[in-house]
Picture 1 (spheres, rainbow, N blue to C red):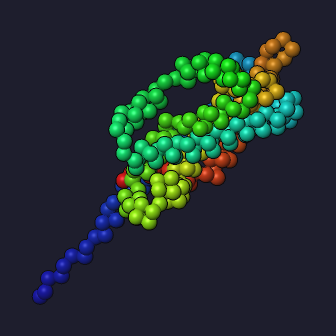
Picture 2 (spheres, rainbow, N blue to C red):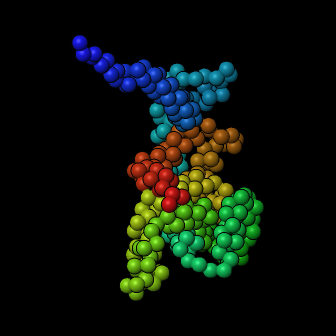
Picture 3 (cartoon, helix red, strand yellow):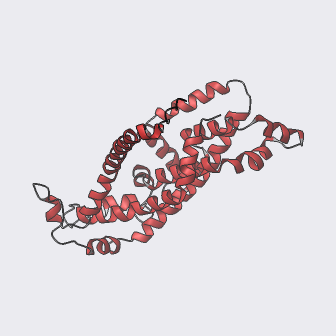
Length: 290
């Protein structure tokens, strides 16, 4: 008689229940974390649909008795919402475009060029990221005031041209990971470093360009201190208008209208991220890889 070998057991049958449990735990954790991140925005939406009395109620009145849809229309019509949004959009586009290009150029220099003291300069650049904005804001204001640039868009133009340390770091890490053969082949063909940057390196950096633009746009769109200090009431941004315009005759904030306006204020950022999220995630994931 010939012995029959036992039928091998599919290993997936033994690991199947364990995988399902692991996936269940993973999905539970992810859903919980997502809820924690979306919770504040959900509370903001609910607050924008309440009455002032419901917002001030104690204990907390979680849901409105009657949804106040007119809060959205009131928040939009009581101020020049589109005018303030236009100011924010212009400033954010100017700064995000210029700082992305200038940071890419500086990052290219740190990644591909050699010069004495380059590592020291790069360390100083990284160290400047630890400086709070409040430390440099007053000297910056005095400089712009003496140059006659207060209540203009020139401060954001100069800030954009001066690049941003964090974005320089992103571009430097990305450009450092590109093959050296690309650069050498271009030099053999007679292309200088400006041409190498514009024709070869920059077209390949769309993931980091997208990430840099979204980050810079979000910084500027959400900035409150600089526009409050440098711009007049008519030329100020939507962030300042939302926090300072919805008040009663006694100067008390109308919190439900502020919440409704804040929801409309956040929507453009969400749309930009949804449109550019693939490039944004790719840029953040590939930066630093060689």
